[in-house]
Image (cartoon, rainbow, N blue to C red; front, side):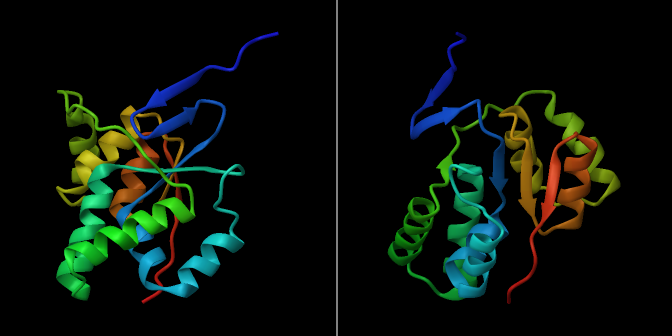
Length: 159
């Protein structure tokens, strides 16, 4: 019988048996701020083991910045809410990715859609870590992912 290979990361176990659902910054922010977003998330079945949820440290950093700068959270409160959300929904923080020359692929595709510069390394990270599906709100982000053969699921606005 074939053994199922598991890859260890610094923050836990990532199984290559699961479809990886990457969560962009907007999803994390909404899960912290809006009970309607939490309800939507649960109704859509975004939970382990049905779906393997993950995000990048860049998304977590952006989320923290949004909470502090736009919603007047203290740094401590922002950190606690982010940690609570990651734990509640079993969202795996993926390891950092070293940026290499092939980031130009994302930059070229992103230019067609007027992708924000800060989204380039996020898409690159998901792409290099072979995340199968990304939950995202931004059109340019979504279109860039589609050209990279990464499925994108549209996340609604809750504000």
